Amino acid sequence: MRGTRRELLATFLGTAVAAGCRRRAPEASWDVDLAPDFSERAHRYLRPPASAVAGAVTEEVRCRVLVVGGGVTGLTAAWTLGRAGQGDVMVLELGDAAGGTASYGQTEASAYPYAAHYVPAPTDENGDLVALLEEMGLVEGRGPEGIEWAEEALCATPKERVFHNGV
Image 1 (cartoon, one colour):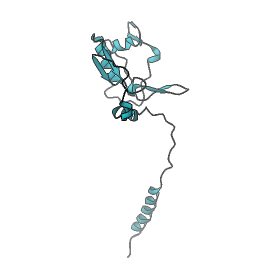
Image 2 (tube, helix red, strand yellow):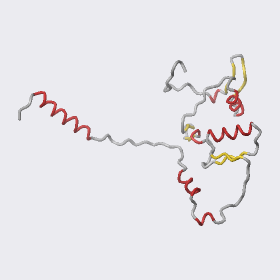
Image 3 (cartoon, one colour):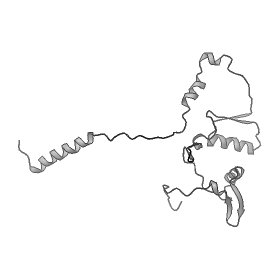
């Protein structure tokens, strides 16, 4: 069988490229600290062994409203209920601390968030958010320019953000 020079080159170059595709890059080694996975703990509570159930209840606690989950949404629900005068609210959290994906890890160098939960500094028009941040001690005062925020709580605008129409 006879072919053209172009077909011969394409065959040899194609074989070389295909052979290169089979090589795997060396696996990278990463030292990371992931947000805690509480699935094992959750399943222990969901399906405890029979021996753990017998006599497991040591205290009965009653409340009018039970918020399940101490993440941002659960904490916001409890805070909103409290502000509305509902005082008998309990938050049930599976983790060791409240916060959900808004919680953080820490190294010797600094603390770091598990997920990106940034809140743009709101204006007075967003009264509920300003009230929450004020209760958290993040409002230092009000001046002619508007709300004065606690400097240590501010962060620079992340450069990886995509802006559309200046927002």
